[in-house]
Image (cartoon, rainbow, N blue to C red):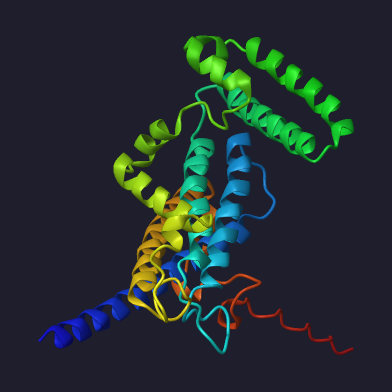
Length: 292
């Protein structure tokens, strides 16, 4: 009886994985098609910046769909059933969505947008200073430190920035913050339940890094080895579902911002390049020479 139940559960898990893969494939196709169909056009600054973050979400989605087993995006003579192939990219998608949501939201004024973008610039500046200092490239640090001070001056002279609570201003001026709101505040905006988000976040972090949870329970010819197993298959299926839902929400916001891209959403038949052969646009037909 137990063996029969085990067999039935394996069949159900297998079906669930195939359904999750197809769902994520569809979400990736539509997202990439929309991203590529935006092209070069005039847009409000916050929308223009949101296209860059959206493109990064698409790139992480392509990395996942190209790595997970049974994907039509990549032909291979073997399957790598290890959750680690998708963990880092899955984490990038869910945290990148929070940033995308923050940027794509219409600011209430030019002053607010100026604060948003300068807080990001300052964060970027401080990270570059840290990276250069860590590798001993001190010659590039001076200019960045000057730039950081100029950004702080811009923030301090901004009337909208001055309306923020003192603690928030202090966080922003430190350069540690990418966004004005905290991650928990962005989770509320995203409609994500805090405990569930951090449960996923912690699991993904264990595999994005080589931490004990990712290897303490490895099983011979099973979990954690790359061979087909129920645990990694279940984790992969769950993340494919979560990332598909996240990508779909981002694509909805992108098509709302650029309505002319909605026609590019054609499910698994969406057209973009590079990508699977069936998704590539048909080459233009050669023009016929006119007879004289």
